[in-house]
Image (spheres, rainbow, N blue to C red):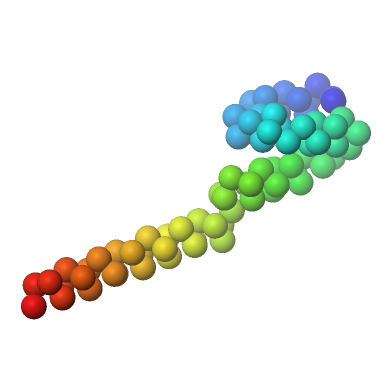
Length: 77
């Protein structure tokens, strides 16, 4: 793997952990260093940190809060 690509991966703890979990990315980056953006996207998807994942988590939290509020109101009445 090229030195600059490896230093970039080592500087980002999430990418470093992802490459350790899935060593096929190490081999892929050794052959095609321009695939670094694909590695970043795959790591974000794997760890659930994409925008749709975050929106889903917020939506789920709001639904839970709404349910709790409805339960509280029902108990109070």
